[in-house]
Image (cartoon, rainbow, N blue to C red; front, side):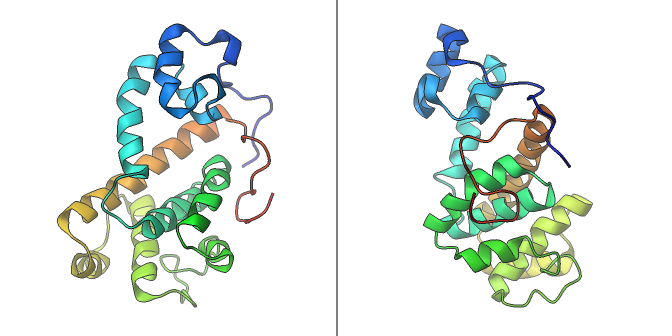
Length: 193
């Protein structure tokens, strides 16, 4: 899907931020916050509740950083969310995903889409399949659930399902708003700008 230009709901310009919005953005860079934050802060009441939840999923969750980023990139790919993909490539690299792995996330023959998932470890393959099932059916199938159950705590299972839902929700919002990328970031399905 092509991104409409200009943004349908642009980030609030730094000069137009209200004192309340600036206070809410203080933790993410204030007037210099990323476009996602300066767009979502247009609804201060929701932002006030959303930011701690999103922050907990991004930093402080029970999943490993690598697993979290693998899941987020898969959601971004499946939802055609260029903003999410662009922001999370560097985070995924810092979390230990290699460039070939990141590119393979965008391979439609990966697990969950009927392909053989060549190159993925069993734990990675089951995570990717879980993402695909949640996005397609809004439920994880029994066989995949059993594999996840063997490898994860209850808290990790809750977090995994909410992580997929959260980033799918953000994908829908940011794609609909046509939120512009923050500078030069990798395009959807790539690792370099």
